[in-house]
Image (cartoon, rainbow, N blue to C red; front, side, top):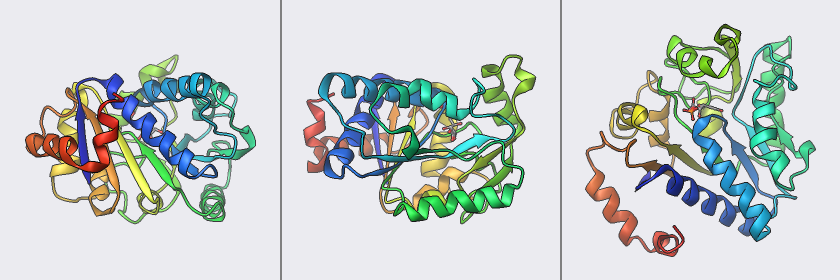
Length: 264
Ligand code: F6R
């Protein structure tokens, strides 16, 4: 795991966007794993700008989102499909038929989960998976006690997650209590993972996730088992980390990161 701490959330989003652009340029047919949430909004704005101003070409990409609320129509303004269309897909040149989210309206949960897993496998697997982290330590909607090898399934949401996300619903009680989510095992199958973490309210959970012991009580700790994870945090989110000095040194000195220094 590499941890890169940048002064602002804007710079964190910029670095993530450059890594995604490099991925797409190296492999135009990339399969991208995408996340929703407040943290991703800056990143998607950057990608939209890079498409508009620099011609970043998404036309051959396929995407799979981590999750979708159970019981919301894709057209519902609170659905993750609506979020993705608004924040990213409508602002870049991706074919909407190549963008996938679980079907929140599926009645047979097991069948829908198996269908989603199958589609990911048939696409050749996810090249680059984007993640945020919830205050409960979830990645996707893998709430505490999710099996570290879990696959896509329907999951009940914790009160922490309901408190985190219900203010985005009008009224807040409209937030579904269940969601389809890729499993932790599904996420760990991705070839490369970028987790973006910004804001002081994530400082405690980030420290536990990357410097604490691996535990199913904090799903994000499973990322410690993956061979290619980059965590990009802003200064506020990194406030509780113990190894900050070392992480800064690595970012300043590893040849891999040198080209990004002047682009930020
Ligand atoms: C969203 C998702 C979640 C969010 C997490 C952080 O698709 O899978 O794990 O990444 O809840 O959300 P924000 O960025 O709103 O704090």
